[in-house]
Image (tube, rainbow over all chains, first blue to last red; front, side, top):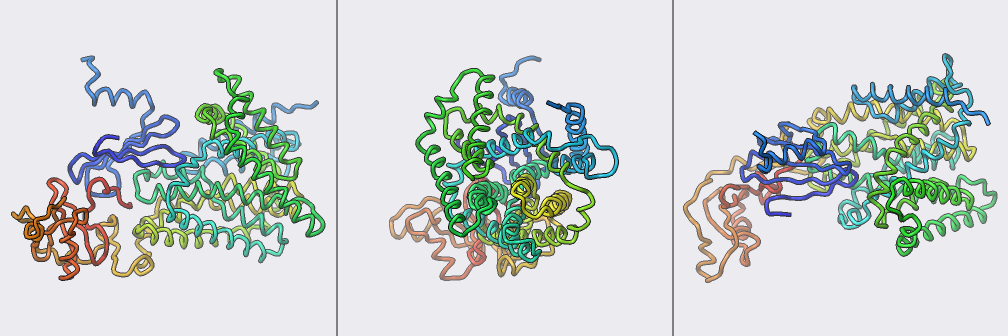
Length: 75
Length: 494
């Protein structure tokens, strides 16, 4: 995996990707469950509890991913 | 042949509806299925949907077999075996404490030694399904203790295989000690044979099942699983262990992912039937007689789990919240307890085991999500000395505040950008560390000379700060803990 992304195996659930955003109070973790569902954990403060957790289906995750990666051009 | 589709359909539909309603208030589904079975079974006054639970015996057996088969298929052998000694020690403690507490309680009940062994397993092995769901629903997947919790659960599954092998001969009606020894030998021999197939014969099994069509793969797999489970039953090992091991075999073939995906819905449906049928066999009148032992058992499990949680936290350096989270998340009991109770009843042991385990599972199923979601309340009440001297747990905080020397931080900025000791020696360094007590700058522990650590040792100045732009983490030498974690490790306990 690329630099700044830490992968953690979660046996029985899937894989967790911790994305280092370079600032101490902002973090994003994505859990990809083996069933395909993604849990998006957003940390916007120094607290260990996530600010928001969003459950995305595979389809929804693709949509968000496309927008984030700017491969989505429909205006 | 008499087929009661109305009864089956009604009871399964109701089970699904009750489980859906239960989900809204955070209840796991297994006890919901069971309760529907109890309420609409012949042993309870009121409407009876299934008059003869034994008509559903084949479906229930298939549910049990598929449950264990799927467990074997998804068993992450490489991950677990490569996960290090600490996890095995933690899991060993958890299983050892829980199983021995269960065994002692079983003996104290005075129902018999074989019964005590079944109770030991039913009380000792937690529900993977309940714990996993709890972690997802409580948003704890990024917590530091979560991979440890999942690891313990997986090792428990492995333990279950050995426990079933040990239990099978005890449950069979062997007369003499010699017969018992022979049965244990057969049982473990069978286990070894299947392990050998898993190790060396996976390719043959893969060829036997291999097909591109999902339809045929599902048919072939279910046939093979049922056959192996049935054969194991006939040689005196339980069908449960046969199913679990053939699952392990399949998990080593290239078909693993597809089989896991195809079998999942089958498992869910037939497992629900299994839990409902277990409930159907319970006479509600018998629950009263086992209420006191079941409540005591639940209380013992709670205490033992919290103890195991503390041991795990000490091993892994978690704080109070991590310790309590470990203990309370693995508190739920479900599928394995009911499987063991079913095996015991089928073997003709004391029939009180059925209602006893049913009630015990029910109590913990309600208590476990409630307690786990409130773990921070309990965490505040755990005294600091239980985890580690000198650490102070601050409410809502992560491991970072367990350092007690924050008052000694005086200097947090510096213009120095060299390790002067290394410059004198003519050596190089990797990263720089700032002593927050006196401002001295030295090289890190990845550098050849480790001057920052040497400085801390000679002066007893506790906290250093990493001089890394954008990531100024701190570490306390006296408390051996991170004060502010580096970002890649920032997902500490919570």
